[in-house]
Length: 295
Image (cartoon, rainbow, N blue to C red; front, side):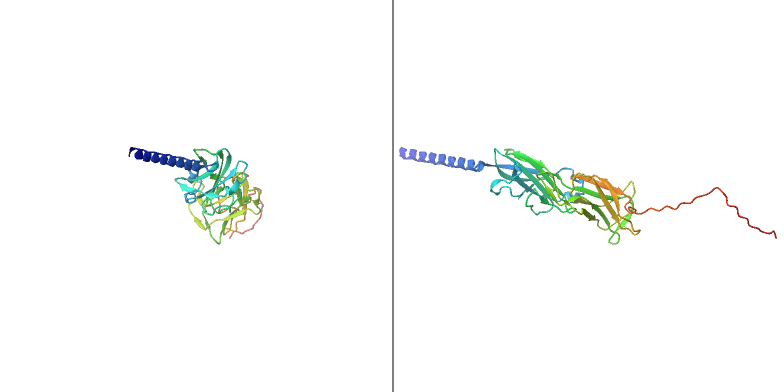
């Protein structure tokens, strides 16, 4: 009887050891899946966004995407460089990826208010004026602590303000033309794709009536976003007011990614041809006689 109990205990111990061994092996497989280890990556958007843009734009929940390339910016083997969506987590976004511990990687991030997943973050399509976008890049190897990256604006925000009253309507439209804009962005190089839009980009403002504007209290007419490089540009402003304003130019506007430019001026009279009426007084008299008779 004693021997039977001892045998039962030995069998149970052996089964327990086998179970532990299998669990350890399973855990090892999870933590080192054919040389791939899980790592958490996270991204955040910049703080204080409302200081550079209207809250209704920046407070929209963004959709964030990640793409992983090798240290040379090339695709990983096995299709592991496909763009994937990240999960919203608190004030940022997170994802778990599987990497080889001994290799270095390029992590590319793209966030926008649109939910369409880009095909490749090395050439992301963008339509000027449409929406706010952020991008980020982090070069790193696998780490048990994961990696994090803070994204920056890749567009310039252009805000137009006026110091005088005016009415923008279908009859009196208002436009700004940015001559050099781009229709794609390369997150790997963190710059616009070299081919610029040939005709630039023209933004037409929504109808608005402005009253109470002054030099000390300018009123915002509207704003838009443009994908640009760091070169200053000559913008064209045209307000087709009731007096037949002509198109005019605003020189040396410092457009750059992650930059908010505020244009301020007399929009209602911008572009008008000024005319001057001059009166001259001559000190030399011209003598004329006029005869009269006393009655």
